[in-house]
Length: 131
Length: 397
Image (cartoon, rainbow over all chains, first blue to last red; front, side, top):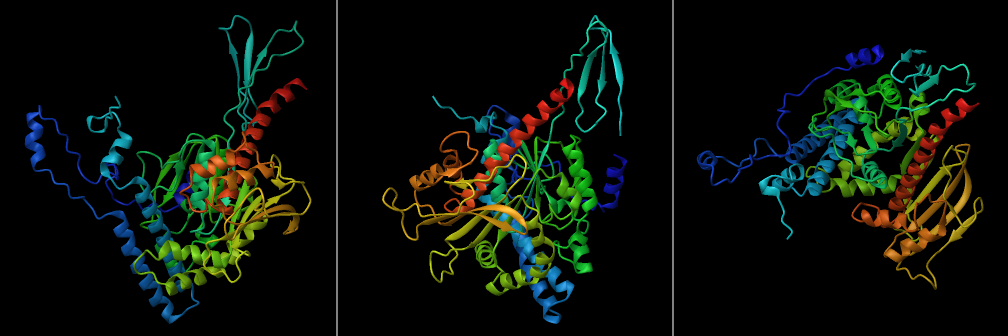
């Protein structure tokens, strides 16, 4: 087991500073409509619905575009160098990531309420009454 | 590592003692009755969870994720990323299966690879020692902290805890590259996509992206080809099953790539794996199901089955050219294939219909992926049954 620990130490860990505690799928704060709760009426008035950061597919699409430009520039100089090949590999990787993000978005339905209800079906907003 | 601890239990009102198995891989517990009057020992074994490891190799953009979804569906349930963890995790977890993406074992992140001028396909960019250690640990039932490679940022994130599952699938570019990892695999699959089909699929995938043009897609494929041919392609000789996707032969001069010819190449002599066959095992059959009983639309369906030799291995090849238009074509074909390892008549058709929106659901890719999924389920059940009976047989002897 010691060998596993040492092997893990070799891998450089560069953690991204993101807010991991916040569930990433929920892009807007959920506004609970409880009319008997006087406090919620006051607090919910000014809650804005704008998402906190750019949508993931927009970020990836920009990266894809940028990486293609980089690859074309790198390869203009020397078409068979390692840098050129690595640049086009990066384009491929980002295109794959973009396509996965698109598929995930399509599968999820891109409705924040649906996503919230998938995880919390018992809350008031998500209850369904069949009869 | 032979650790054998002996405990004596007073609570059972007779002198029993239990030892843990000297072979730590199976983690069995034996109960012995120290009663010298009796000549036999009662042995109860409760083996720890046996993990079955499946390897899946393919280039990126070649249908691995579709295959994964079909495979997890055969076992029941949907595979999802681990809840509450890194949202960019590549791991998928369902009740029975855990899918690990081997990109997580990159030793160089994107900037590192750019500096050194190596692609992700190059073995220098991957940490095979860590891959071997962790797959071995998971196979023996030990949880591991697996690194995460974030495809969006191109960086290596903090590791996530992976519990050993019943079925572990490792998918990526190099599951069969390293010999030690290859020996850990119970079954391995390689998705071999021909160049024309790969080009057509990548165009379909990438033309929606702004920034991409036909030339950039072509340049990307061409640039990666040398590394692919040198490092990834040779893995197909080690695979137990190869799904080869080629352009159709039914339409002369076809360049649309909509109709596909798919070959399922199955290695003979693999333990717990019996190849699918048509009509008569080991013979050469050419079959066009469309005729009086079944009417198909253009270009129809054509099947081939033959024994063959593939990289000096004996194989059986089932080939399908064309596409399915209707449900009854699918069930007709299924009823004539043998050794499918289905649990009931029509299971293949049912699985294909469950995922009719997946790419390849109307041609051989979906059909053979579903069949391989059923074969893996059969292999898993045989392996589990074998591992649980083996210790009791050893005890009786």
